[in-house]
Amino acid sequence: MTRVGRNFGDTVQKEALPAVSADVIFASSRFPNYKIGANNQIVNARGDPKVLSMKEVVARETALLLDQQNRLSVRDLANKFEKGLAAAAKLSEEARLREAASLEKHVLLKKLRDALESLKGRVAGRNKDDVKEAIAMVEALAVQLTQREGELIQEKAEVKKLATFLKQASEDAKKLVDEERAFARAEIENARAAVQRVEEAIQEREQVSRASGKQDLEELMKEVQEARRIKMLHQPSKVMDMEHELRALRIQLAEKSKHSLLLLKELARSKRVGGNLSNLYELDGAEVLGSYLRIKPCSDIAPELSKCSIQWYRISSEGGKKELISGANKSVYAPEPFDVGRILQVEIIYDGELIILTTTAAIDPAAGLGNYVEALVRKHDVEFNVVVTQMNGADHPSESIHVLHVGKMRMKLCKGNATLAKEYYSSSMQLCGVRGGGNAAAQALFWQAKKEFSVVLAFESERERNAAIMLARRFAFDCNIMLAGPDDRASLGT
Image (tube, rainbow, N blue to C red; front, side, top):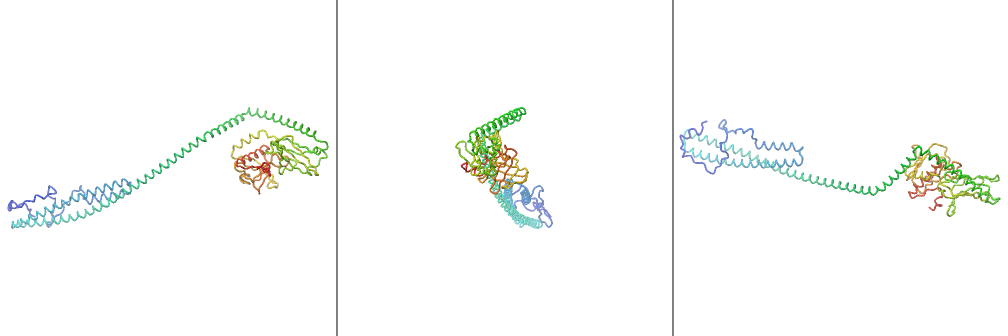
């Protein structure tokens, strides 16, 4: 192919060429880098490998967004969408500039073709053929430019779609960020409210602690004093000295009590009228809690007690009111805690004749029993080893050890892991000392847990039996219940 400009200056005068319009603006200062292939076809030159096309940039950004969508936070995703939207706007601006440049190229090609057409009519021969080839090349270049414009229009539509998608995604991301922010603020408010409630509870607890701290301190001081007293008592030398002294005092007190009782009985006997039936019997036994009293014949002509009717009474030392002791109709009677401070009287009826015997003084309390019970009151539950001698009025042959639990709210009788009775304190419950039963009466008590269950329990000592009665009545009284024996509530005014 012959170049257009080689012999062009030899045949055409420069004055014949029309000047290019002044309003034409070139997009570049150099001529486009085109290549002409076979049959004079224009082929696009390969672009710079370092410069990516608009499609590749959009595809790469979209792939990066889709790849990172699952691992980005909401805020990062929103920032990424904003960056994508900015990139799309930039690409749209570049497309607009390219469209303007394409328009300039069309104008340039149009003017170039017009110039070649005017030149075609002025030349002849071989130059005319060259001008025709140049016009064909310009027309091919215009077709190529039109195709490129179609591609640009398509790319522009895709960029608009992507921009719309990125804009919507950015708005959605902003909404999601706002929702997450509102949710976080709500969580923060809830946490603040919870912290405030905890602080108020702590302040209230501190106020309660300050109010009860003084009382707890007083109770602690009492416990410390009691612990010191127990510690001092457990020192071997002091314990031995106190035991010897206490034993000597008890022996002396027992001897003096016995001597005083004998003197009182002799005095009472001397005051009686001769021939009176009262001289036939007398009360034998220590008049103190923990012992038992027995009707003892003092004459050979005294009738057998099995043929007599016997009934024991309590007489108040203040008003002299006589109270019947229900069930106490045996020749032996063991005083119980209700009898302390009262005079006991027994009436013996034989063949229509009435014989009345009374104790010389009121029943004395057992030494040290009060302190022992006060120590047990501090415990929540106190256990006593007992033996069941009667159950529901019938003798119980088994002599196995049972455990009686006396608690602040209830009483319970157990044998190993088995529970025979477990009842809360109530008005139907009865508890008192056994009213009769021989020498063992001072160590036994009667307990009616409920109407269909009652037992007679034998303790290891008189002290434990009386302590169990006093302790149970103390706990029941704290529950506003008067715990007593049969018919004792009526005599006590309850």
